[in-house]
Structures are given as C-alpha cells and as structure tokens.
Length: 107
Image 1 (cartoon, rainbow, N blue to C red):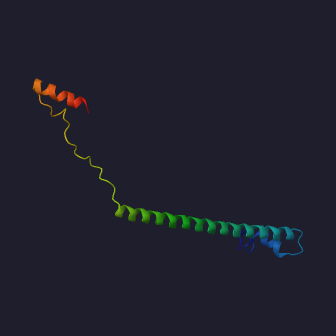
Image 2: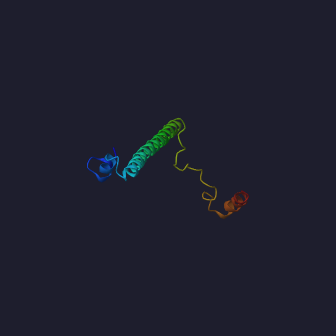
Image 3: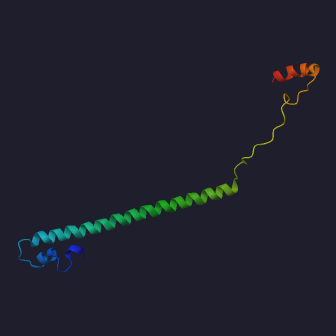
C-alpha cells in the first residue's frame, strides 16, 4: 500500500467515502500512485538484471584473460644484452683504426 493511502490520511478518508465528489479522483490518484510504484519496481528489477548480466560477462572475460595469460606469458620487460658494437671496441692505434673504419661505416 502506498503511504498516502495509509489509514487516517486525507486521500484515504476521501477514498473511503464513495459518495464524496472527490472519490473518483482519489481512486484514480491511488491507482496512479500504485502503478507508479509498480513501474519503479519493474524498472529496478530490469536494471538489476542488466547489471548482473554485465557483471557476469565481465567476470567471464577476466577469467578468460587470466587463463590466457597463464598459458601465454608476456615477454620479459628486461632489456636483452646486445653484443658490443664494433665502434665501441675499435682499436685505438691509428693504423688499425683506419682499417676498421671503412668496415664500420659500410654498415
């Protein structure tokens, strides 16, 4: 029952006296209030169902991604150690440096 239809409220008093000129209006208003409450409940249930479905889908996706990550680990983020470049280890003597320089610049 809607709070405005509780015993002793003005709307209830008018609705209880069928010969009152406001009686049809009070009944219609009571029906509108009840329909509004029922519609609100229906909307809340639909929203709850939609949110539950979205939550279940999100949980399924998270479980799939966890299983996928367990089977296929990501490559490590550590940099690989590359071989030292020839320019860094080039000999310091002028004769050997001249012989190595064309080979390094050709790369």
